[in-house]
Length: 238
Image (cartoon, rainbow, N blue to C red; front, side, top):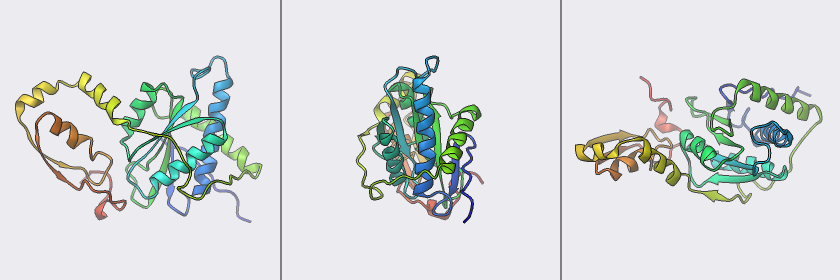
């Protein structure tokens, strides 16, 4: 019998190749490690989240099975007595971070592999301040996962994609904050003509919509969903 896979977090998240490393069983395992951490913090009097309503924001990007992996995580959180709010569509990471703070959630789980090639998926955990979890926090989660593996933990969930989770639209609160930070009146006077390459990512319906809201004439490229990113690397580099 092969030893259990080691789930290591880097830059707040764990990433792996879909179906080889990044499986539904491993997503449930990682989520249980996070749930154990959150419940421990909720019980700790000097914790920043002690006494808070145990709401966790869930989101995903345009990668393969993002929503389904999020629903699997939501089901594990529900089994641990934590409340879940799932973004109603693929969502940019900063939008998820803002809504963690805006809704005073105890944390967030975002299914994204960031700049990695399309065969990768990832699970990123953010703490109640909306920021990526620190190595101190992810170290505790990794230790929880090792304990679960040693105990032979497993999770019997619903058929993939069938778990019901409350959804919400994270865009209005994020746009409201942007309108406070950016002088859109200046952009409106500029009467811009802008070409936007959304690179098959989560920016569709965000960057283009913001520009259109100030009267810019926007030409959009690659705004459709494509988990293979059109055959290009998902990071917009040379």
